[in-house]
Image 1 (cartoon, rainbow, N blue to C red):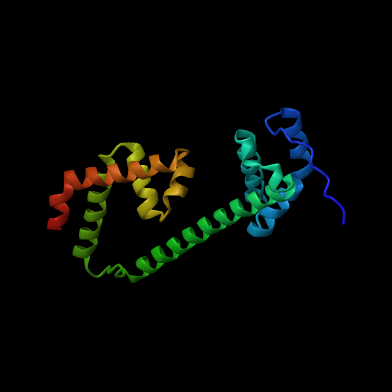
Image 2 (cartoon, rainbow, N blue to C red; image 1 turned 120 degrees about the horizontal axis):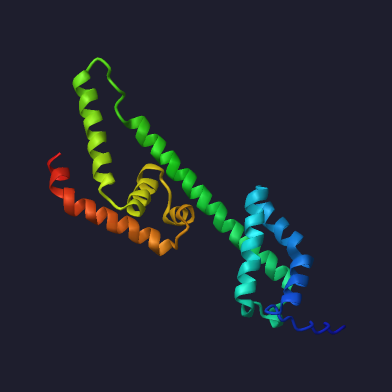
Length: 186
């Protein structure tokens, strides 16, 4: 029976140590992410995310629990699965939106009164949204018309998830306060 050799202590907060770990494990981390995602660009994003997380919080790695390589690959796989699930959820939201659009009544060009009413409703909705601050309007449009989740809105708007959710909540609240009576009457 052989003893396992003690691992050298890694100080991931040390720049040269971090650079060495990055150069030794970047390809393995990329491969782990690519196997899940099948997309080179997103896999590179995962590599960047994994190493940024280790750089900003090096204490996350505990050498007594194992080696750095498998730890980084596990982080990459977990992050890649998160991204894959988000994309899958967005795809399902898009599918639901398609079903709703298909269920809507077809445009009846024989009934100009219906066309006029639909155009008027769309103009009223645009007017209501235009009264909102740009950030709130963008969050609501991305959520309800594009079918994006709050995490995706956060990424598109380059703001934290909580901020994206607050913008939607405040925008909807404002619409409800200002136009609630009109919306209920319609």
